[in-house]
Image (tube, rainbow, N blue to C red; front, side, top):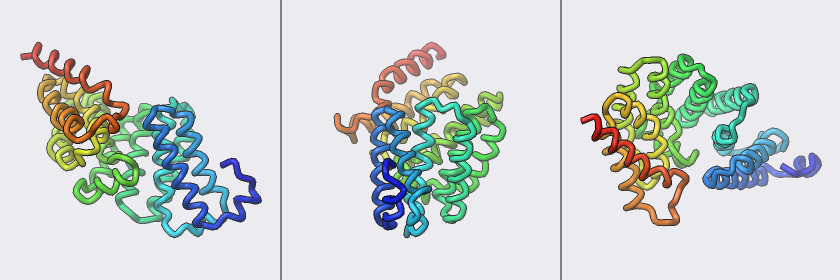
Length: 262
């Protein structure tokens, strides 16, 4: 983190905690403005404090380190990381730490990260097996709000939504549509309507599956309700996120495809 080993050895656990939280906040800011290079740098700095500051083992609440793993993983994705071994090591550390911490909310996020990593490297069968474990553990009513608070959005729920695409890739069309229906009926209505970006990330994978199977207008209705309407009624210009420029084109595309299919 730019600090000498001599200084790192003098840091108290409270200092390490504040430095980790600061760099996590910086990393999220850079992710939100689509600057993966600076985001990766911030999260890696936080990770260095965890690994190199001796007093990090005395952290009172180990859960503050979990957003470091998650945030770095997301930043690496946007930065087009091709180092599978580094990514794999990151996921293994996250799974180990969350399992030791024994909190199903954070372990759910780790499983989601594992599934996404597998899918990004074409291992869709294994990704779906991991997603099955995630769905067995995940409880939207109990976990979603805390997951979003810890990681910026409900990335566990989003992983379940992404699994529709993995099923579709493997020609499991019925299973893919079942995931779409589950997301529409069981997950989206329970998401925080103020967190529009979260709803966008949960809807984005399934609208393409629905469009392909003649359900474009239903997808348009859901996108209008959970994303466009909530953006207009609950956010102002200060609430702009990176998904905003896509709202109108997506609505137009789904409207055009759905109308032509009637």
